[in-house]
Image (cartoon, rainbow, N blue to C red; front, side, top):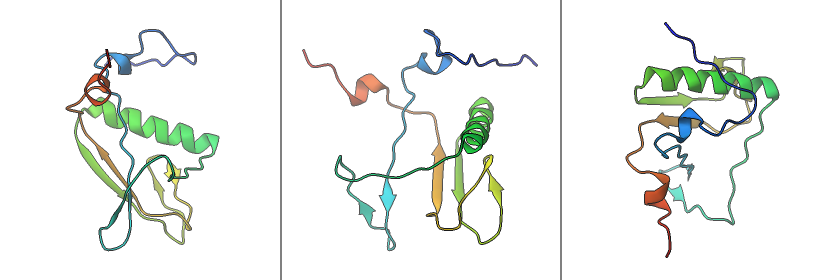
Length: 114
């Protein structure tokens, strides 16, 4: 199996630019299934150590190479449990991650105004 190599410097022809659908959608859900309306006045705070960034990045790259849709639910525990290359701090919120092939591209979401 051929390996995939990642350059430390960003390249002009990165593989994730190929289809222009490298999109992340972030939401916040309260107890009772109430979704918080997201806009520029609200924010989600992620604090990652460098090792957590590496672990999460490697886990997400492996997941992307499988080319399968996934649903991951990560709970904070009072004891160390590693998921996706990191430990979720016990004071954290529960984390849901869906990985799927986007049906939209950046151009669909942000149409050019002429």
